[in-house]
Length: 399
Image (cartoon, rainbow, N blue to C red; front, side, top):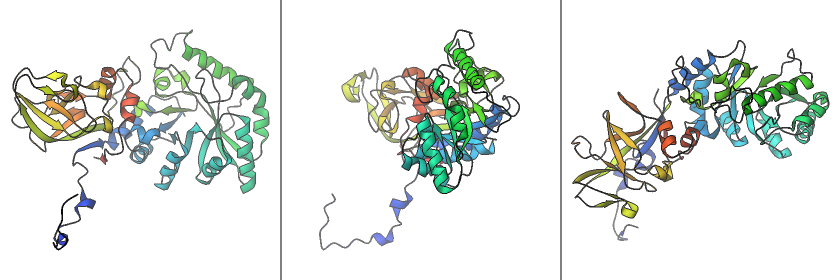
């Protein structure tokens, strides 16, 4: 607390309202390239079977990119549906003016939540006849039909009807007068594995089980019910997985989930992570850096302190493993990544100063650092990297 004398007069009215005008790029921020999302969707749609529709999965705030921006550009690229994980995510999109059909991929199980879903024109995922009955009663209460998607578990062991139960109960569900079955779907557990096209793989077993379900319920393709199974990996694997719609997440954001890259597909990462240099420090040889002093300088070293850390979503286990880009050059991060800051060795650079901008994820001419690089370094998956960036990192749309 600043020590102010009670008889002292402060004339702050001479200054603008700085609090409201804090620069988005004051410390660290995410740049979202909406045009990249649109281009990726167009590219991916060009690989689809005829008449197959495209659901853009925008859960987890659009994989950390900003769900509203992603939704707008995905729809521009030709997405017919949007997928979210939670009721609140769906409501936020509706509140922002999004009119596109939205499927909630998570499970709603209370009457209250299902009424809210109905009120906001959000389609729930249904995994049991109990929720079907609730939805039918809600539709009857309002004199309308409640649109929903039925999910069946074919091997993920997560959400969805048990296979035999859906076979047994499908005719009864169809008879409910106040629900509208918009879709029937399942989810692939291992489509990104190298053996996914092998006849004995879990992916192929799931595919056959899903086809068997459709046969056993005497599914009529003339009915306006969308059948969907493929995620990004399934969509890229084979057109046999496409059915009436695909649900695409990671690929839309510029990354292929498959180890084997499709040479005919040039996906563009849509997220750049940038940070300002907040301080410059010169240390002598033999000086420890950051908590634990695990990194010790082997020469006189110029350090740039960057205003970003693990509280922003940079994995701490990447300490000493990553580099940053400035003006087409790479500089190593040194010492432990801390909650709000990290240090970078910029020895030899005269151009890096307080206020300089550095790229943690993204590209600058010849140099590129991707979420895949970070995922490999921290032994995780790119989905987790992208979804980990916290809200205190402003999202800035740059096109």
